[in-house]
Image (cartoon, rainbow, N blue to C red; front, side, top):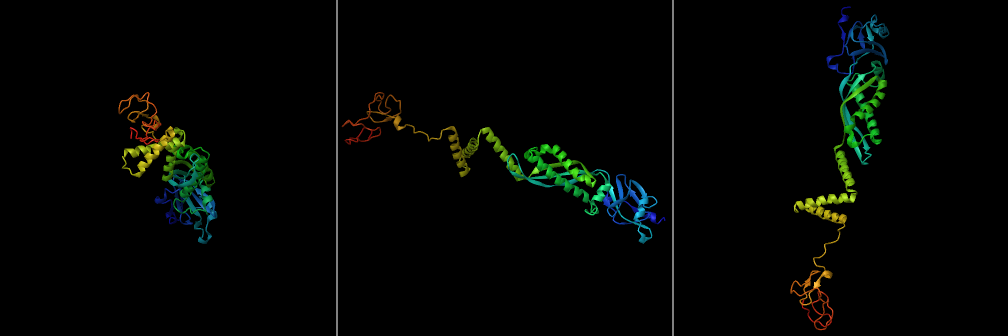
Length: 351
């Protein structure tokens, strides 16, 4: 009998961080010693059903100690082995489990732009009911693989986060460009939805660790630029005034470079000045220094003078009472710029 007592069953040191550890041998020797740590529970499973459990402590695998093991006796071995799967489930909270990936392509309600959301972070996982966990996943998940339950829970968390975040943004509860400030309500909504799904598997996510929801870099830049333009348009009053201001900035940059910025600077300058003229109402070309209709022609020397001048700037002849220019020979009326008389051909003084 002492020979049988020398076989021990326990979770190896290298597997103590696993949420679920499966003993590799389904033939468990009678009178083996099973050591269950304080933060573990051991379960014997036969055909998908939990037959017996062992709490923390040292146990001798024997039907005398655990009468229900009598149903697991392997008759082919003369009753020296119990044939069953043995699982060790951690009852403590497991922290620092990584999760993340692409959330969804979603339309931002504010800008109507389609953007891509991503999330990265970690979470804590605990077992609510070890028996439900084992019976729900046996046959559908390879519980012998390390961290398989953690990875499966991370996938389910990511799925729940996709649903919660997409719905929250679509309803207008959370802005796409302000998700960093909404992590607390996002966490509450995601945990509520995730734990509903995990309940039937005997699992629970008590909290999320550090996590962040981000935009793809190109989407973030696009939305920031659009938000800036929208704000400026609102301040300017309409898009045309905003465009005029943007072009004016191009004009100032072009002039500041003194033409060294290439054609783009001068084009921006020209467009900027044109836009400013249109929005200030001054879209007419500058008037000549001395419009013809505003000139006063000296009767003696035919010199054009500015409107309102009282004396000729060339010969000093008074202009206030100057008559309409006429030909010296035939007295025909002349235009202000005529060099010859149109009636007789006599040259004028200006000619």
